[in-house]
Length: 219
Image (tube, rainbow, N blue to C red; front, side, top):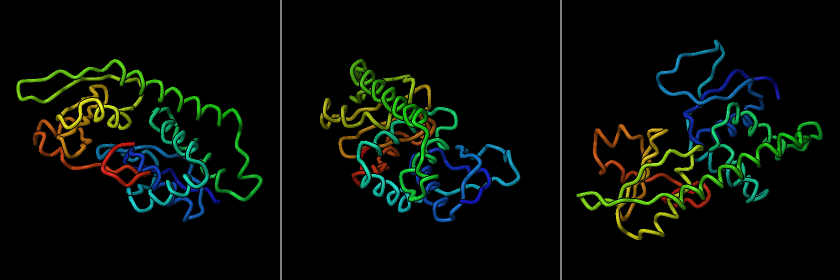
């Protein structure tokens, strides 16, 4: 692979997998990969923004699943750790998984251990949040709770709370990241908190897809 400019994307896991697909397609290697919101300024003249493409993201996810379901889960969990330069580290790891070249397929054992240590840390935080988060009923009947997890585990906990509260509507706010996970009895929603303030809970009926199942639920 030849060296590519710095890559930016929307910060989502689907966006990251879209970056991986695009880079592989172009047969180039990025100098850096970082998330970027609409207000960020261009830091490098050669910066390239890659749009999220769910079709491309699913192709990368399914290809990784064929290699190892445990590996792809570890990659996803490590991504949610939000560590500095985690995207570039995971890209290099994914590149080594798919490469036939002895040079490219070689991946530092210490870096691989770091990825799966981060994944384990995220898994422990997920379990902690599920164990100690209790939702309280407000006047409208909606069950609500606030969390401030160390890692971005909000996309991981929907299955637990759906199982615990059945079809009763609930909403969990990650106050550290300004994100809300909600369930209205039919759909799961995953939205920035400011959108909920502006439009109300009806906007949370917009589902978010799980790559590994194709269902309208989180991982």
